[in-house]
Length: 227
Image 1: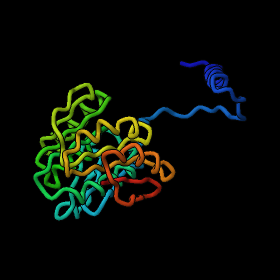
Image 2: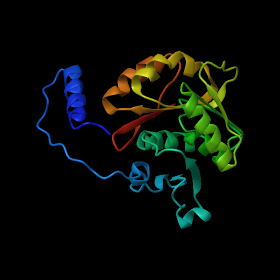
Image 3: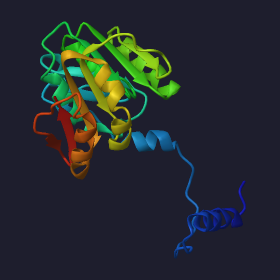
C-alpha cells in the first residue's frame, strides 16, 4: 500500500520537472474499481461518415448497419484521432471506385485501410512505426474479414498506389513528402490529414513539386488535403 506522502512526492517531482509551482490541491482516497471498464462506458459507436461507423468491441453495431453501413469492428482501444481520420476517410471515399491499390501510411489500428477494402479496393497496405499498432491492425482486418497487409515502417515499399492516405500530423507529413509522393502512381490520388487550418500552406508547399491539391476540406477543425 502506498503511504500518504507518496502522491505528494510524485506531484512535487512532476512540478519540479515541469518548472511550475505546485498547484492548490486536495488528496482523497477513492475505492478501487475496474477503471478500464469504467472508461469504456463513455465510448459508443462513432459515425465517421454516411457509410462508416467505428464500433469498439465492447459495443453492439447500430441496427441500420445491417443494411447500408460499413462497419469497422474490433478496435482494442477507442480511436483518439477519429475526427482527422474522418476527414481523411472522406477524401479517400471519393477516390475509390473499385479495384484500386491503397497505401495507408501511419495506419494505426488500420481503420482507413480496412475501410478502403470494404469500399472495394483490390489491395490495401498499412504502414506504422509502432509494432503494437501493426499487430492491432492485422487483428482488426481479420475480425472484419478483409485481407489487409500491415507492415512496420522499416519494410521496403516496392509498389506505387492508386491512392495514398496519411493521417498523421503536419510535421511528419512535411518530412515524409518525398516518400509519400513517390509511392503515389502517376495519375493517382493522395489524401493527407491531421492538419490544422494554419498548417495547410506549409504542408502544401512541401508537396508542391509533385502534387496539385484541390481546395482543402475541413471537419471540426481538422483539414484534409487531397490531390
